[in-house]
Length: 177
Image (cartoon, rainbow, N blue to C red; front, side):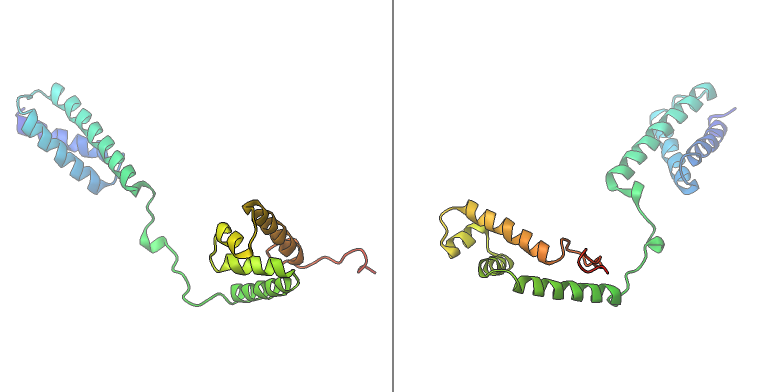
């Protein structure tokens, strides 16, 4: 059997081997690369007993290189564009109402806090750091600001019902009939 006939048979085996691990198109490309390596670097090898194991070993190396490249590029976890749900351009009415209710609860809770807590929250929301807040309020220790912040957040959380999310309140013992 001539080398060209042997290479045709070897190519079929390479394609079958690669197709069992990847898609048919990828297998064809991989077989072409292996055949190129066999032709350029191993042209002296002519016996089928030597060519088949050599070709399959080169195929394994090429498959491993392909897997590493896919992993590096993040292609192993890609999702088809057709499978990604498109976001609704309109705002969800339920989320809008929920956000509006939370903002109202927050306004009421903030109004019930003391002046120091309201001022502290105002400064934090304006982007001031704790050190800038300390200087603005004229406090000697930054730890005092940390303590005030913690206490004010606790008070706000209690006024919000113990949770940032709005949930239906269960009646307390005094409200039950």
